[in-house]
Image (cartoon, rainbow, N blue to C red):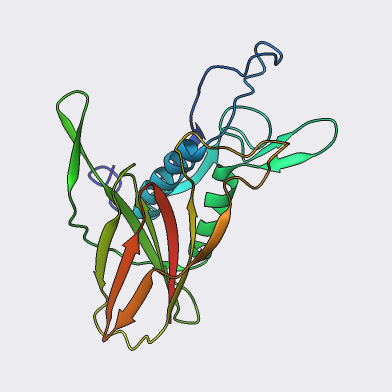
Length: 213
């Protein structure tokens, strides 16, 4: 689009993105009620990373849908509601709103997938808020191995790194009405910063947002 609209007067609107799995057995056919696992959380984080990278072009994006349909952030029944892993990803990524996108270059191992393609084992995005705090969101899609990540932040005088992490024992783990906190955000202590270099030990199948200040 930059070729035909270099002034970027035309914005892209991405409607109804998200996963579409088989409907849950016993639910109303055609209502597209599906369970939402840690796997869906990765779909959310990787998709949001792409949207954030092209924030100068993408004006709006809508997940399908917010409640009880497809990749929902909230599931409800007659007695209550459950926050899904996808909800928790959105909660972790909200720090990037009203902040300045920080371009980054990512070098990491890749994994072979179908169609003779390769996919990076780590996805990342970063921003700087109005107070000067930097937030870096990282996703390790490797289901078995942790990743040690080094982030160079030129000119940074930051001395503190803290974070939140979303992970679970299995990619298929989800929050149910009987166990609504199976997959939730927890404090993350695996990030250290020294002389402008951030080191993160990111566990297998985990998503983290690191605050650097």
